[in-house]
Length: 435
Image 1 (tube, rainbow, N blue to C red):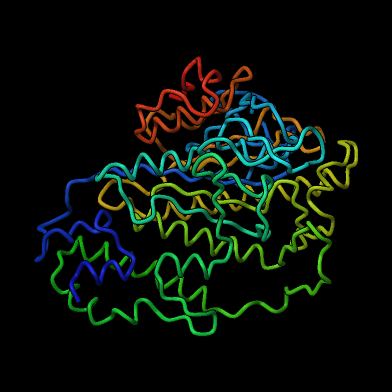
Image 2: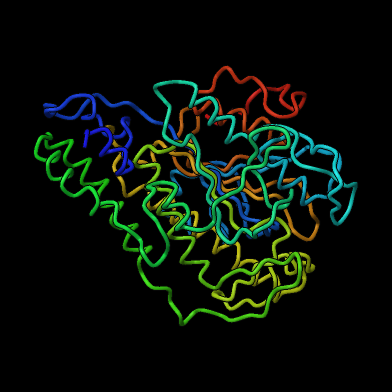
């Protein structure tokens, strides 16, 4: 097998393993080619502002209870309060909150009726993740195998403006993949079914042995790191399901998704797959979607039986519901922190520091507050590193459109020719200054 075919089968890109261009080995580490990456994580139904936003802006901010899991990454965190989704038009607040979140433009006319407002259709323009994919894939030096990957966790098997946030363009929603087996198969093409998961590494072990002997110490270290990541994923996917947490339920009511009690485990496997894809330079752009807008997830692993959306509608003085919502949002923060930790543990391929230093993680939501359905103060938490983004701070803006935030982050990814995004008039003041 030709070495390029062998490494492609293993899931390794030319950009991630510099020795592809010249065997025998290099005489040391190659010149660093800095990669910039972006991951957008979504969780639904708003947050609890008083337990989320710090009491003061600046570098001396303190995390409130929901964001406490991010404490180890405080120096790499940027909190942005005052970012508004200013997109109006047809559809209810959840529909526009979800499908206008990454597109920053109005929904198209349609016949999908929500809980309030006028019926609407799909988003009317490309989402920021797909715009970045288009840009990066247009350049040889930043082109990757997939361009972007869309991960999901407990996303229901349905398609509507409440379940889709990524769009290739008008009327072109992109469905997230919420089955780790399907995502592994997409990445490596080795999964026949769950009972006969073939090992990518076993399939190419002879080629691995032959190629490994021709590499420099640095190249061998990079390849071994990749092999370790793949083996770990195979072991996790082969592990039997924990039957002790299975919860048998009757079929849900129409329109209400069944959220499996294995959601925490699925979340971690999906995060590990995402980190693996970034480490191997399969993609530099990804989204990670928990559930859906208006989702009725039951967080039984937290001792919560009520549906998430129903809880988010309860008044602020309902202390029991308030405590449960705080638990739910803190759990999401913990998954976000796990994503950051995994990236911080992997050295930057061909560079200095960790992968987190060159990856910008964004955690957001379709609403600022669940029971008011507001699009004001949309949660925006940034962790990691990117050019022009100075972390270790909490910033307070004055009702700025989220269009301007996406514009600034696109430019941080090198997309400098982009001068507006989504609804153009909302970008009149240019990108946000985050440096």
